[in-house]
Length: 242
Image 1 (cartoon, rainbow, N blue to C red):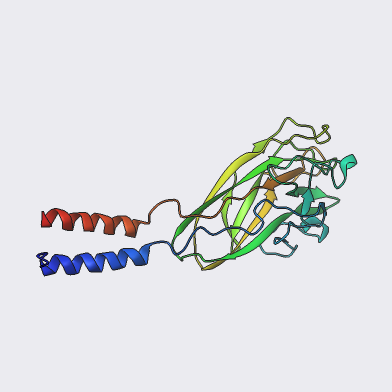
Image 2 (image 1 turned 30 degrees about the horizontal axis):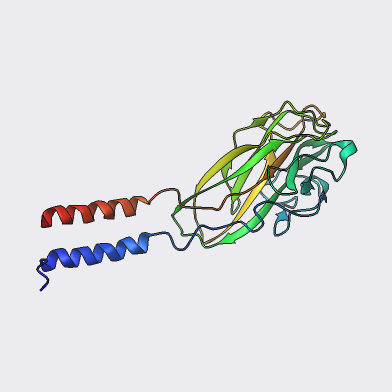
C-alpha cells in the first residue's frame, strides 16, 4: 500500500507536471546547411540561405549591389582581386563587404528563418568569423551584427588578421563567436550582416570584407529559472517527507 501522505503526493505530481511543461520542446534547432556550402560567386548565397536586400530596415546597404551576399572558396571566384580564402570547414564560406564604395554603402550578409523556438526561452549558438579582405576592402579587422526578427541581438567581438588580402592560398584566421538570445516567437528569422566598429571606410584600407562559416545547432544552454525553482521545490518536499 502507498503510504505517502496525500498532500505530498499531490504536490509532487503537480510539480512534476509543471516541470515537464517547462522543459525545452524537442532537440536543438539546426540551421539548414550549417557549413555554408554552395557555388562560389558574387551575389550567391549558400544553399538554403538568402541574402539581405537593401531597404531591409536593419541593413545599412543603400544599393542592390551593396546588399549582395558573396560565396567564396579556396580557388575563387576571383583570385586576382582577392575573392578567395580557406573555409573553416567544407568547401565554401559566406562573406560580406562593409564600407562606402563610390558613395554607396555596402553591408552584405545572409539570413535564414527557423521554427521550433519556445517563447521566453534562452538559446545559444556559435559560428566562426574571419577577416577575408579583397582588393577593394583591405581593413584588417571587422565583426558581424546578428539580428533576430529584425532586432539586434549581438555585435560580435572583432577579429583581426595579419594575412594579406592577396596572400597565396590565403589561410584565413577563423575565430569562434557565441550568440545568446531570448526567443520572442516560435519562428525566428536570424540574419548576419558584416560590420566594422571602426566605421564605414571610404578607401580600400578602411573597408572590410568579413567571412562567416560553420554554424553550431541552436540549443538551450542551461535550465530556465522556472525549472530550477521547481527542482528546488521537489527537493524540499523530499526533505519534509524524510
